[in-house]
Image (cartoon, rainbow, N blue to C red; front, side, top):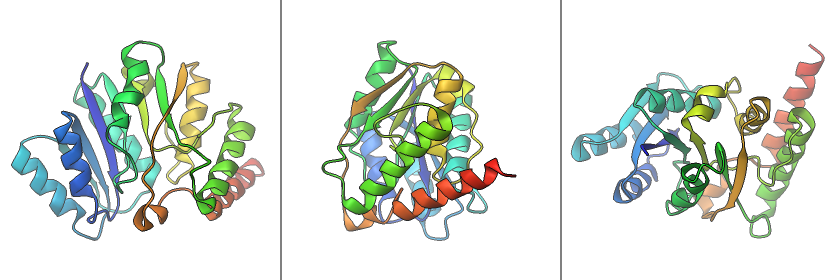
Amino acid sequence: MKTFVVVPAYNEEKTVQNVLEDLLKMGFDFVVVDDGSSDDTNKIVTRIIKEKQQGLLCKHLLNRGLGAAIKTGIEAALAQGADIIVTFDADGQHDPNDINTVIMPIIKKEADVAVGKRNFKEMPSSKKYGNQIMNFITLIFYGIRVNDSQSGLRAFNRKAAQSIIINARDYGVSSEIIGEVKRHQLKLEEVPMKTIYTDYTMKKGTNLYEGLKILTKLILNIFK
């Protein structure tokens, strides 16, 4: 089955080269979505694609947000004929070996969507509370309970990737994707994954502030 790894990247010049080289070593093709980076992200990705003669780069002229980058990447992977699409962060927090774990339920036809589940006991407090809030938001607003709604490591079969509709541009996209899984009655599996915490990766992703900001936005939308 043809697997494409979608890598949203915004100002990731410090880490994107290692991430892409690891993916290529494991035999995975990739689609990088440069979400309006102002650093050398675009230059680094372009060089790797030219040297390896593999991979695809999509570029947003302006920073449109994580949700928009994931949407662009999924559409590009589908256009390339992907059977399985994996989303994978560009900041180095994911172990590339976990890709094989997260795609296995898809390959075995046990799930339409698989999501990597982080160990919350090992998660720093600043991250844990924000993610717990987002799990609660996902349950309240989308009606589905999951252990790790904000995981950036996900796998979709082609049917699921074609079905889900992404409107959120911010980190709320992760909960929206889970909601789309329920809306289209897709089968979801969660699988254990490793998270690599560094000073750099700690600055990324969902924290308490982001969780509260998304909650406020959703509540305001109700009263519009």
